[in-house]
Image (cartoon, rainbow, N blue to C red; front, side, top):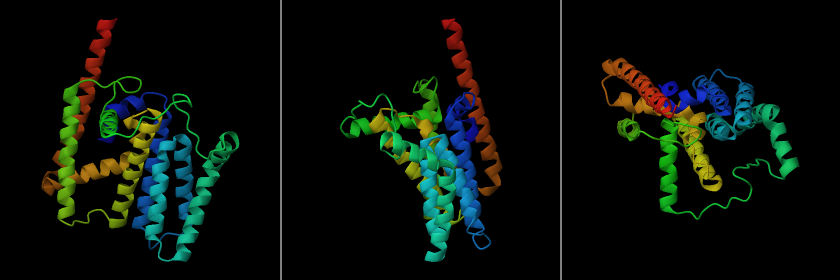
Length: 274
């Protein structure tokens, strides 16, 4: 279903580094999940490969740093003792530095800053923090995460966004029910890992939106796997298990239909413009 988001379909059809960052972050989430589930059998050196993937994700797009932070947290959470923690942290850091270390060193050498970000010119002054400004920024991020029509933040078609508001609200109700039922379909360490990844990604996206005037939902895409996982848990919790396949098929075909509707509307618009 994640691959059928209108925004993701649009980005996948263009040459953008966000798609590469999403790929590496998704691969990293898979490796971390495997490390958590196979904790008794894994070697500490496995974390070096997770670090390599995290470095490649960061190198592709800095917004993927949320995955690296969440991976460090799950590394700490799953280590049995301090000795194991230091070994895993060492292997993980070695992996990150082997792929992305030179980029941080370059930034430090050129800009005297480990993670230099330049957007809209270095003279941009962020507005004061206010509820109205941050609320509007969060709404824009939500809309452009699900569906964007154009180069950056062109969002139209209120009916499509209305559907996604209801869809996410339904998933949140399911997640609340999942928590209240104290279910453990998802291992606790893995659930915390995915939730932290979403939190870090959202925080960095909001920070970037406020300080660099660029509130774009696509910056959340490195956390697409955790977001889709929790949405899937929320939706499936609301329906009996025997209907899960039907629910999944309905969501997939609905998302595909929305893509068709969007493309037909855009095609009609461009046809009129000539």
